[in-house]
Length: 152
Image: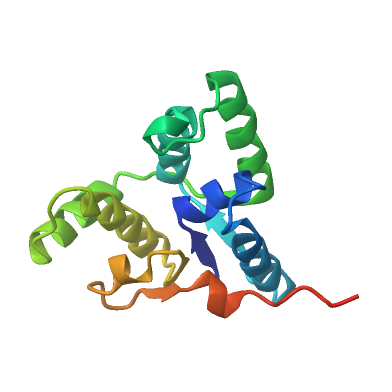
């Protein structure tokens, strides 16, 4: 079974000094060891770019566009990038209407729409509650998935 990576996982993977980096890396490693293909969608890359190029003072990574391009390119080389398809928009519209989605959570609904269109039922995310309203979607908590590193 495949797993979509939420943008917050990708952002933590890119920040080696972030307190959640080890958990994100541990969860990704555990899923890879279990043979689960890890996927991303174009929206992940857009969201990464927005946060990546935003100044640190406003909760961004403070990367230059050149640095963000290098990181997005690296992420797409590590994880399979699924395409956007015309079927995603009507599914997103159905979801936001059916669940009375408003504000920033519409981004999560678009990830769910892409998941639905591509037949994905699992997402690795630090924000599992953001996906609770969607039936058939299993939000995996990285802390629960991560295998602790071996002790020396």
